[in-house]
Amino acid sequence: MQNFWNKIKLVWTDTTLRKRVLFVLFALVVFRLLAAIPIPGIDTAALDRFLSNNQFFGILNIFSGGGLSNLSIIMLGVGPYITSSIIMQLLTIMVPALKRIYHEEGEAGRKRFTQYSRLLTVPLAAIQGFSLLAILESQSILVNLTPFDRITNLVIVVAGGIVLMWLGELMSEFGIGNGVSLIIFAGIVAQLPTELNQIIFAFDASQIPLLLLFVAIGAIVIAGVVIVTEAERPIPVTYAKRVRGMKMYGGGSTYLPLRVNQAGVIPIIFALSILLFPQMIGTALTKFSSPVIQKIGEVLASFSQTSVLYAVLYFILVFLFTYFYTAVTFDPEALSNNLQKNGAFIPGIRPGPSTAEYISKVLGRITMLGATFLGFIAILPLIMRAVTGITAIALGGTALLIVVSVVLDLIKKIDAQVSMREY
Image (tube, rainbow, N blue to C red; front, side):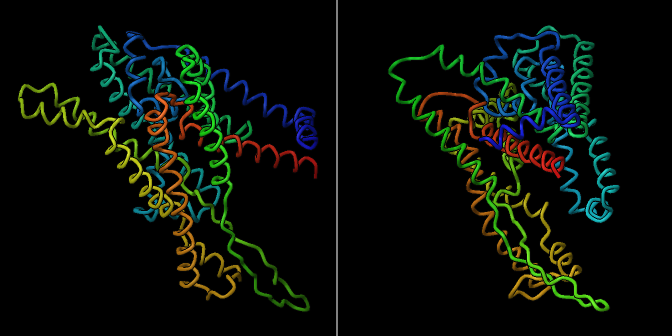
C-alpha cells in the first residue's frame, strides 16, 4: 500500500505524467458534456421503456459511452470505429496486401492501417446511424420528424461518432491508456449511479437475500475477470549460442506468454450483433398485411432475451467467435518463423512447422477455457435477471469485464510510465 501511494505521489509531482493525467480528465469531461446534448424530436418516456426492455441496446449504450441513453449527438459512440477496426483485422486474412502492411511494415504500416480504419468508420457510421434512427422512429421514440429533420439527425450523429473517434485517439496519444477503452469505461461508470438509484427506489426488505446474492456473485465475477484477464500460459523459449569472432552470444532462456483470453470482449459484440437480426426482421414482418408473414414476424420477434434458446445460442456464438477471433489475430506460423529467424526454439520441439503446430495446440487448449469464461460472462445478466429479477446492464458481466480490463490496463500503463521515470 505504501508503494502504491508513493507512485501516486510521483505521478502528480512529475510534470509530464501530471499533464497526461489532466488531459485524460479534461477529455472525459468534454465527452460527458457531448453526451448530455440530445438530438431533437425525442419521446423520453418511450426511450426509457425501450432501453430497459432490450439488452442489445443496453449493451450498445455501453459502447456508445452512455450517449444512447438520452439519444445524444454522440449516440453512435465508438461503435463504428470498433466495427471498422474489427473488419480491417478480418480483412488481413483475405487480403495479403493488408496483412503485409499490418505485420511486416512496422510502425509506418500500422499508421497506414489505422488510417484505413478511420476512413472506413465514416460509411459505417452513416449506415449504423441510419439504421438506428429508423429503428427508434419505428418504435415511436423519434416523433413528428420531417425529411429534413431525418437528414439533419443523421449528419449530426455521424459527425458525433467521428468527433468521439478523434477524441479517443487524442487521449491515446497525449494521455495514458487506450482512449477508446477509457470512453467506454467512463460511459459505464456514469450509468452506475442511475442504476443503483433504480435498485434503491424499488427496494423491498424481502429482497435483501437476493440483493446479497447479487453482490456476492458480482464480487466473484470481478475476481474471475481479474484472474482470467491476467492469466497466461508461459511457453519456455531458449536462444541458441552463437560465436562471432572471439565472443559468444545468445544462450539465454525466456518464455512466450500466451494469454488465456486473447479475444477480449470482441466475441460478445459479434454474437450480440447476430442475435439482433431475428428481432429486427420480426418487427418489420409484423407490419405486413399477410397473416402468414405476420405470424413469422411474431415468432422471430418473440426470440427475446428471456428465452432459454436465446441464452443457449448466445453462449455458443460467443464460444465459437472466441476461437475465430483468436485465430484471426494470432498467427502461430508467423511466430514460429520469427523464433527461427532469431535463433530461438522451444526445448523438445523442432523449429519450423513442428513449433507452429505445438503453439497452435497449446493455444487451442487455453482458448477453450477463455471461450467458456466469456460465454458465461455474456449470459450472466440473463441468469441474474432470472434469479434476482434485477436488470442492471452496467452491473452485468460484460460491463464488469470491460471495467476491470480497462482498470488493469491503465494501472500497467501508469506503472510503466512511473518505472521509466525512476530509471
